[in-house]
Image (cartoon, rainbow, N blue to C red; front, side):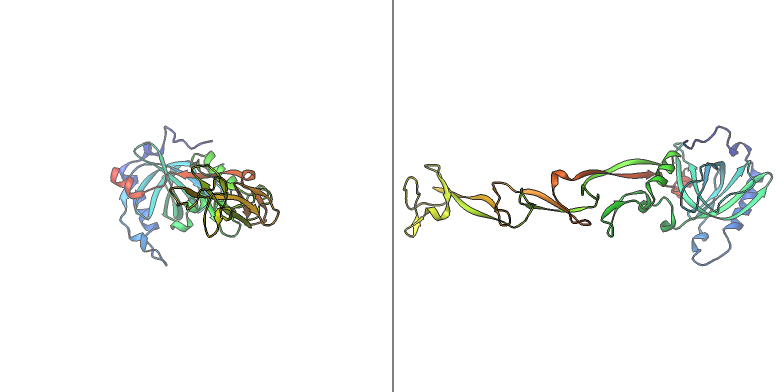
Length: 304
């Protein structure tokens, strides 16, 4: 079930006299000083916009059996006052509110309720937007980031919780990236080049010479004859690098298992379980983030 503003919102019952009473209530609700509440001094603007209210459960999940529609009364950088009809109480003091913009899109923020009053059959609520670090839908909670302890990409909120918010239309899943993870435990690996047979990084290689005129390729030691450079195949002497020959990198040889080949393998080693594996065996994991239309209160005021 996704959030959708009904055609019959509280706006239809909104009038100037009700606004005066409600503004007085919401100003009183956010005017009392308290520790760290300097933000309440922000100017408040009378504005009437459709609004959706979703109470928060203690585990940050939405209370899906309760979504109420209302209308804003006033709005500031730090908080909002609003009216809701048809209910007599709020089941939680922490809410996610969605306020409709000019594009009919809902923009969301987390709100801490400061005061609730009843006025002419309406519930009049005043509250402050939470600090960024307490916002339930802050980027840390909805976007994947590397956990330095688990060595896995995680979101601050569980996937099931984010899925429930997405079901309501508050956020939507977006593919952020694709990464390679350990095939055993899905943690992040480190990657290096190593032996294609055993994964060891203890390898050695020999330098070769390619003689241009006769196309012979051999070890450098085979060309070093009588203190000079001489091709062991065509016997040409006094070879000049760049004109007569070039250096090449010879085959790799594993110092642990004696494997030899012209190429090495990209090898992963898990940071959690220490599994070492050819990178082709890694699992490709999609990193899914959840996009939220975030509320900019002053942006709505300037367009009101």
